[in-house]
Image (cartoon, rainbow, N blue to C red; front, top):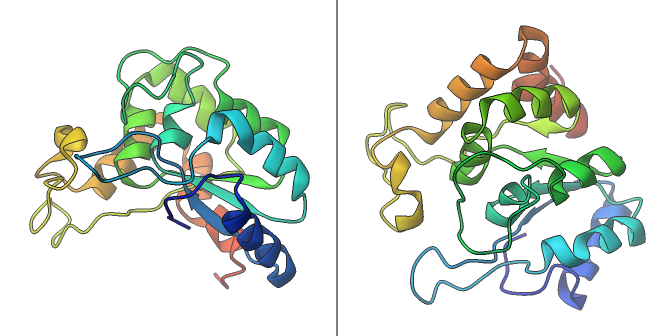
Length: 200
């Protein structure tokens, strides 16, 4: 779900309820900072309000995605930039919610997932181990050849560090380096298959 509405607003609440009724997971794009002028924000209020949503919809399976979800792995994030850099301060909202709520999962795709996992190798290794059953690799990459051709972050200047690179390949490299082979397999294969009920 990617709409210019609040994460706890009536529009998405109807979607959360529908996802529970249909027994399908719902992926939400959380973004509090424009990537470029007048882009707008999406599913706003994640850090302030989403714990209340997780409590209100215990039968809904949520998959967190995008900038605000992943920037909030750090406890010192305050919506100042789409992709913060530097060491991660322990105790972030996303880390806490993944640990406390069985109905929340994390999608590691795009620049947002890559950025969070690339910032602090010590944090990343422990985070992947801690949430190994709740995280899923996704590419969210329009690269034409697996090496960055045919794509760039041109319409996303905030993600220029990955311009000319395959986002998916970069993220797989970080995950493989940071996780044991067993945890890596869960994140890139097993967890999504179980959650989405896809036969192996």
